[in-house]
Image (cartoon, rainbow, N blue to C red):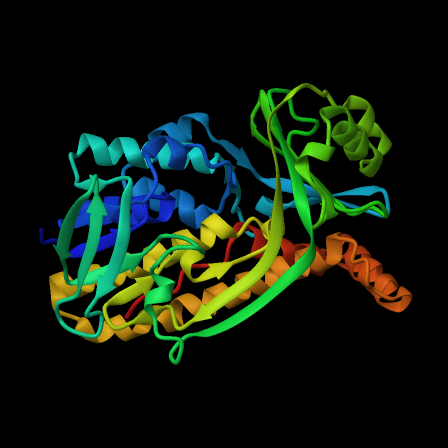
Length: 394
């Protein structure tokens, strides 16, 4: 087999890149180690920056998002028991975010790829990236016990944190920056009406809490728990009581509870791999970086990587601008590190750190109080939350 771009991973970043390339007339093949049902079963983020919303529309997969997604022009931060509104639209000159689940984004992209009859190989194994430093890289893989070779011009590693793409970069080249947190998020998905029409980020002496939603009838709630906690130790009743304890009284009293349809604990990590390119291989999304979910940046960062790579590849194939290839990693990393900073900062302000001394605790509380109650502080939060602009390729 031969294609122009081999895409490793059929998550939203790989599928979005494939859809954009297809519309630009650039052939691509997607390889995925899981089956489609497994990919769609991943419960992930649901807040889309304006840049990602525009990119999905550009890819021709925004119709259902525009019909069913919820435009949010603000969110709330609870500081010292007080609810503070962050008006995104006013503070950013009209920008907003879209609440639309990652599962739905993936579903839309899968449907578009299937309808276009684009080549996708699921349940593949033994994926190996070869000759990345040459002009003729190729990918070896197996499916159903049959070995395959895929020749290509470029490889897009969209296969996540545990994928093979990053591992294909020599350790002498790759530099890792990482911070692991001593707590995680216990999340519950429930078919209950949201407690608030906008997201609520709550700092509390008992720990952080987040009230989120997927639709007017489906909610996603989180509470901070120690990294050693086990899901099976948290009954629905225990979760709801803990969530209520961390919310202002008016929200706690209006909270509608119900049986969970999914419950999990997600560890928190900050991670960046540099560079994001090696030869003809480009790392995209979680293959190159992980952020704590506090700033709603994970999926959105993957989208900005896709946008940059797509713009470069269009210039390469349409204008012969191979000189732009080396710009991919620097352009992406400038935005990645700004998002890492914002996610770390939001995490630091809103969570309890068990090993923090009394002075640091007061500083953290005071910083949150300042930013949540200062016009300049709220503008800083809003600007980062809606997403910093994509850097143009030139």
